[in-house]
Length: 276
Image (cartoon, rainbow, N blue to C red; front, side, top):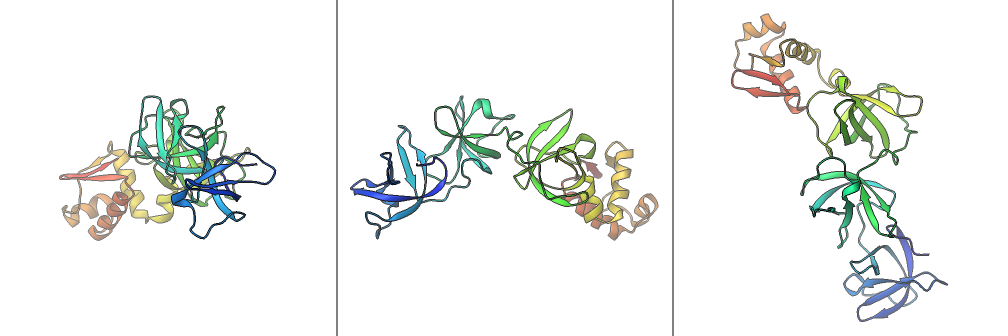
């Protein structure tokens, strides 16, 4: 049986001017592999590795190209166009995959990339969904204090930032653990500070600061938070003033603020630094 959206090996049943018809033995359903994708040496009876989807007329079409994700898998895909009823995403094949409006999370912008999972809808079409909660796994191999990477897939102002760790496991950065501003589709590097009984991961961005940066960074962050997110010091400030305010050298101050800037935690102003 031919499987939609899955890389599979199919037999060449017939070759016509328009291409080759592929399928499996004892199944009357065939998929057309267009002539331009048919290997020159291919002949009837050969087996080809392809992925199958439906064209604009609903006909089974095969491709030898490798998709960025298969049905049941998650990937971060770029929006190529955005009609009123949803969006179309580039998944590596000639025909873009459809993201229905009902399956979007937040605003979707053409040209940006978003984490989605591919599925088969009720009309037997390959579609994408940004609603990942029910698809992410809970049996991650990670434990407390492990550093992990993931993709932001949802943001709840009352709760925090939801992250697909390794594009596979369920994670949450609670509001109190967030540093900086993020959008859906952003990649983040975080630290696990708790593994819940159900397997979900509680993450912190603060943990990355403690692990990857010096203690000088924490001094600056604490000062910024105590002063409503702004300090009148930068790399042009007098070394004595920096030493008196932070207890560190000007060189250490420049290194720490440089790290904070690269981590998108602060921005430089003409008269100082500001917490993002």
